[in-house]
Amino acid sequence: MKKIFFNVSEWEREYISSKLTDCEFEPGTVGETADKVFDAEIVSIFVNSNMRAEDLARFPNAKFIAARSTGYDNIDLGVTAEKNVVVSNVPSYGENTVAEYAFALLLTLSRRMYETIDATKEKGTFMHDGLQGFDLKGKTIGMVGTGRIGVNSIKIAKGFGMNVICYDAFPNEKLASEMGFMYTNLDSLLGEADIVSLHAPLLETTRHMINKTSLSKMKKGIILINTARGGLVETDALVMGLKDGTIGAVGLDVLEEEGYMADELSLLVAQHPNAESMKTVLENRYLMDHPRVVISPHNAFNTKEALTRILDTTIENIKAFEAGKPVNVVK
Ligand code: NAD
Image (cartoon, rainbow, N blue to C red; front, side):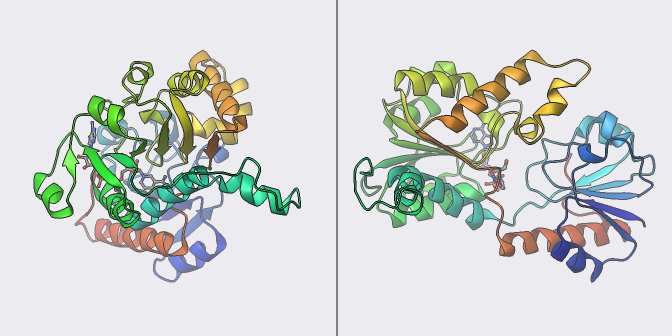
């Protein structure tokens, strides 16, 4: 079957071509090729490509979408089901990778790494002014979501000597007693934790789970880390919380409307520009400039090891579909 892969680098092309036949490659996202129609039956996309009705319409022969990610909120599963297009994901590839990154963001904030490195590299100074941080040891971290990435984050937190409390809509008490942590509800977690790290999927039930109402429940000066999905946090609440000091600092690998941050022009020239999205993009700009916020461009997954695991599972998913026995199917 004819296959097309979006958003692949040179080494990825070579890797995929060595294991699959009949492949075409596009360096950019599906959105970046908006004037083209493709005849491939198998379409492989990364999280930065959407697969809504208007996108799928450009793949008239599509039978299978191989998402090269764990999350698949960028794919309209209602539309794919209607068109009998099977969708698979990569259920696990980067549980340690993303957990390590959540702590990279946290350490950046706790030890003021951005300002510290800037002092020597950019300013050429060895003064300590403004560089004082705080210890992680002894602090309470609240993990929201105790799945694969959450569990790896708990292990790392314990390595730092932190107290761990957790919230999950589907608590796993066996895991809690094996790993030595306590579950609590979200409000209590927000009230007790010095640091909150989000590891839940973006679903209708989790959208804006951290919102303006949450601010009144939070311990003052809380640090929020989000490597999961931007939509879990209401951007308005971040702006308000930072302004009134409820939120002490924020580390984000994901943003609401992050797709538009790479291409703001597409929002401005859209036929029906969406005021909510424009407001969020503006708020994201405020956050990017804020001295107590660090933001990275959805990069937590990005290690050579994790990307190789993503490709291996995607290739297995495609071979299984071609053999008539699809695996890792999402519905
Ligand atoms: P997982 O499915 O293993 O775990 C998710 C956990 O969230 C589960 O324990 C589940 O019970 C829990 N959950 C579900 N609904 C919830 C709710 N309403 N409240 C609280 N918890 C809830 O997923 P994972 O592999 O740990 O990944 C977590 C998320 O991280 C993914 O959904 C994805 O969006 C994100 N992610 C981001 C990157 C990145 O590069 N930034 C990379 C991979 C994954």
